[in-house]
Amino acid sequence: MSKSDTITVYWGPGERLPYPSRNNMIHRKPESLLSFIHGERTPEAQQVRCPAIKDRLDNVYVMKSAVDDTFDFNLDEVAAVKDGYDQHIYDVDSKFKVIKTRVPNLKNYYPATYMLSWLFFASEPVMAKFTAPYYPAFSPIKGALLATGEYDIGRWFRPVALDYHIPIDQSHFELHKDDPVMFVEFMTDKKVVFKRFQPDDILHSLSVEYANTPTSVGPNLSLEERYELAEDSEMTKIVLANIKKNLV
Image 1 (cartoon, rainbow, N blue to C red):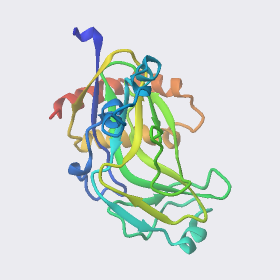
Image 2: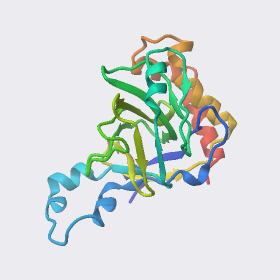
Image 3: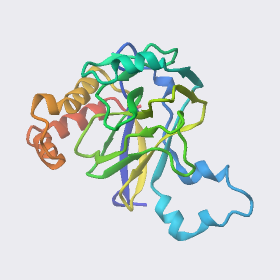
């Protein structure tokens, strides 16, 4: 297989707000969804052999939890802070920081960002779509919605965390080792080759700068305008050069 038939996706752990530590060992390598569901299917399963399904899932990958983590939100605390604009760290007995970063986007839901996060970048432009697990569907909280989105990971570099919208009557969070927490689909026909990098302070600072663009530059820029801003300032080259210095 020639290099033109592959695309390199660099990945590493994202920072956990408010940046106390990086906890590298709890960030698992992306796993092919087809490989993930292979162990779950019945011996008679034919659906995943169907080309229409297999081709659809070829470049979908699973991000999994490396640990067990179970806790309950205090709904009185949730009610007291959910409509405010200030960030708030929830008082929960979790292995991760769990933070309110915004006002609710949906009626009868409260926001909570579970700070297990990743950084992705690619050797060339490629769209990546981030969604909740859907094959099979999974959520650590009954009825919770994981924010979905997509952007070009060859042109934009920011942390991807687990940003939940939780029904206001739900408080119990339960996650077990090997549970899927997020799917990532790479919009390409090329074979994806993953390379792990170890983010240093420069890379984390760069990722925060990208994430803070709405504050520093303005909230109304389109993605294409943001990509052009990064390219015109040669940020794309700076990010890729620093990633290559920190390859494992």
